Image (cartoon, rainbow, N blue to C red; front, side, top):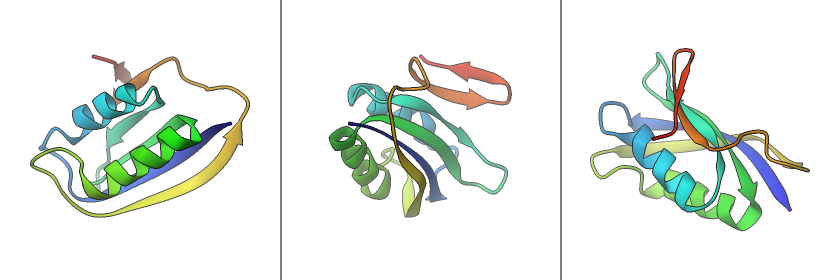
Length: 101
């Protein structure tokens, strides 16, 4: 079964390559979605894929992140089952642009 989950990560998660590591981990787990910095210093995103891969990514977002990050907490919202993924890859959003590499 496929799942979709939104997330927001708090702590030292900007300026420490958090989005790049999040994108790479998402791709490693065959997840689709996106992540981006916010003006309040957090990283937000959406991830979609198999439930077991979503669970692994949740644990990674809560505990690991990028090597220089310091995660205080991660909030997951809008968890739902989906019939198909809405994205073709895992992207980093910057303004109106999306980067997959």
